[in-house]
Image (cartoon, rainbow, N blue to C red; front, side, top):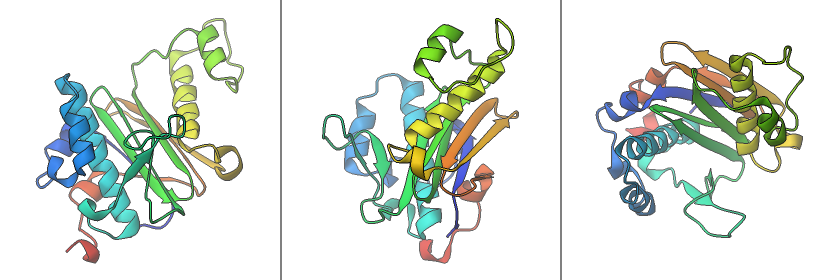
Length: 212
């Protein structure tokens, strides 16, 4: 078990090429959702993100990945199966996932947690649009701000949003990373200072005793 908030960023292939990982670890409702995804690359990204989330939840709780009991609920429509992921019997713990074009990220920790990952070469959009979408976007120098600055502001805002409605009061810590080997930019919002773990820690590191 890992105390405190943490996040893992990996490529989709790193996750799916790990022995022992696959759709069999997912719940039936998750597998049904996967079969409805017709674009192979997106299918793989969603599968890899859900597998990585299970590994992070398992590391946080000490349970086997297939028995973490992940669920999702959408407060807008009131339905299950989509929306923010959570652990029904662990209300004090937070989990989050993200995927984008061959990259995946997952985070877990005490209290609300949110994570976002984007390709480092992605252009987040024109500044006027971003200011409408991100009202807290800080003043950036120049008429045409550096796209890297805008992208980092975007992932930070997304991470805060994914942490949930209690985020402004509960989330006091924000971590941001640029993973150059994977070409990724990621951010994590959490109630404790988040740590970024290398993928090997959850993909092929030693399993906690509770897994064995």
